[in-house]
Amino acid sequence: MDITFLGHASLQLYIAGKTLIVDPFISANELATAIDVNSLKADYILVTHGHQDHVLDVEQIAKNNPEIIVVSNFEIVSWFGGKSINGHPMNHGGKKTFDFGLVKYVNAIHSSVLPDGNYGGNPGGFVIEAEGKRIYIAGDTALTYDMKLIPETMGPVDLAVLPIGDNFTMGYEDAVVAADFIQCDTVLGCHYDTFPPIVMDKNAAQQHFKAKGKKLWLPNIGETITL
Ligand code: NI
Ligand code: MN
Image (cartoon, rainbow, N blue to C red; front, side, top):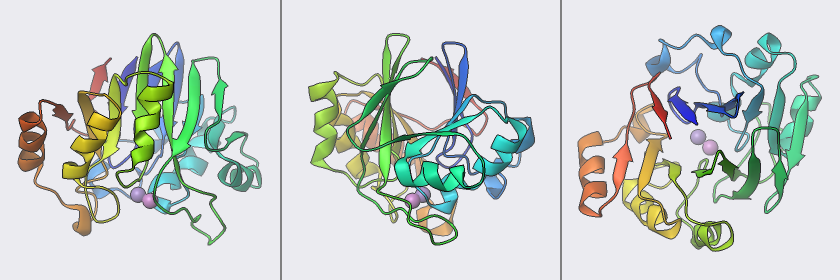
């Protein structure tokens, strides 16, 4: 499983011969000018919630990849369905096996409205099980005890993608507690530095994780890791 960080909370995952994009917000991200949205190929787009900084480039990517399937909550999938984009609707607690692996849509503590003001359902995160690995993509969320349900029901997490930029989501101090809740030692930090309210001291965040015996991975935009 390869994971490329596309900036903010956007990722590209290569799993079992399929390509997934998560929460594409690239064309308006001044830090992500190295990524060309029109060059992105994907089979699926996973959308955690309806906010602009998570859905902005879905339509453009779908235009370039007409077979793409949007996986999100029912309301968001219905909204994209109105734009003739294919989707697979889920809701909290539900899991579904796709051709690349299993996806479970899990709770997040946040809000979710679509860019035109339409109701975006309740926000969520995803747990993906594939190729013998388990990864948790939290979406925008506060720290919540619900995270403990993930290892309790599914098993420990190999990699967690957690927001760490504070203000709109949990900050890195809460994210390291989240990593304990989900029984995960390696965290990919996201949702920081993109906007002034979430500019973060990266060194302090990494030191904080290190002091708790955990690794905080802060890749450059466009960097890939193999899990
Ligand atoms: Ni949000
Ligand atoms: Mn956000």
